[in-house]
Amino acid sequence: MPDDRPETDPVTPAPTDVRTGIGEWILVDQDSLLLTLGTNIYTGTSLRRALSSRVARDLLIPALKRSMLDRVDRDEVAVVDGVEWSVVVHVITSPLTDEVFAAHGIVHRADEERPERPVVGSLEWKIVVGEGPGSGIRLYWDRAMFELYEFAKTEYDDSVRSFVAPLWYNDLVAPKDRARFRVIVDEVITAVAPELHSITYDVVTGQGTGRRGTKTLRVAGRAAGQKGDEVFYLRGVVHEAEDVQADYHPGIATVKSDDFLRAVLELNTDSAMCAVDTRTWDVYLVTEGWSLAGLPPLTDGSFLDLFAPGDRAEVEAYLHDAATRTTVAVDPLRTRVRPSDGSVRDVLLSATGVQSGSETDRYVFLRLTSV
Picture 1 (tube, helix red, strand yellow):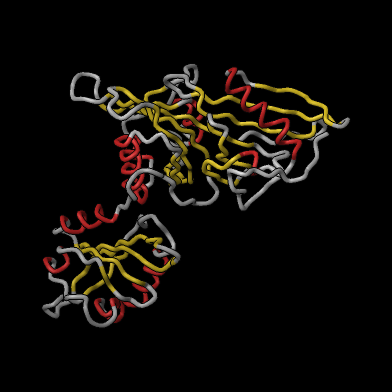
Picture 2: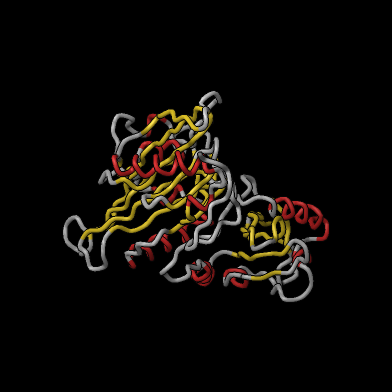
């Protein structure tokens, strides 16, 4: 008779967050490794070890495995100790090759309302090695991907299963995550890494709707093929994430986007830009264009000393507000600076917040443009 006593596992250590698994949608990959349990994100955790309820273990785990093996969705009722339980499984396949990659399932009392199933999208990269016709990388989405990105219905054909992802797909990844996301994917492709990888990133939503927004998504996937193959695939599932998780990419180099920033700053010789700490008003990451614009060096004193005395309070308020946002304000601030020659010059000040480490609402990156 099933009970709710914890089960031991001599191989896989128990996760720190153990849940009953009753009444929550659970996402697993093709190896039955846990990806999500409710709103919690996991990366390859043993599902059996994550579920404290033996009812969930005895009913849902076999159903997930059978469904993926048989490629059949399930909606069944099982009786345990006189109680009826609903067991539902939805199989997720890759959009191009139709390979089973994951399953989404739930077990709950049959007399209780079933929670709505969260949207989980499926994507697939096809990589053709070489330089001849047909070589390169193509990305495919299923319909659920367009739902996650909140596309207008007119932007895609709801009658087909597989889509070649838009050529401007990279533009939908938020600018702050674009370099990191791309480099991680390229590293996984280069290594043909079969291990499970996980990336959390922000995206721009609402294409074609006139209502653009942002949300945080998480992709979990792995490569299918061998290094040296002429054709191989990278398959994954995508879902919303309430919290940003650390990237997980075993077997490949640690990915940093710092050098992209270095290159941008060194090449930017025609714009006066810098980063500012709005708590101390220290300045760093100054572009070459700063001195070329005739602005004084920012090595001594407060950044606010650059501005005309009557404008400093307004500049301070503008930058404090900018530090709370990761988008550039639509309207720049018109203000006055005092260049090296002692004159007063009108400029437009634009700024965006920079969220770095544990500090939030503190740093800004800004640009000064002559009027």
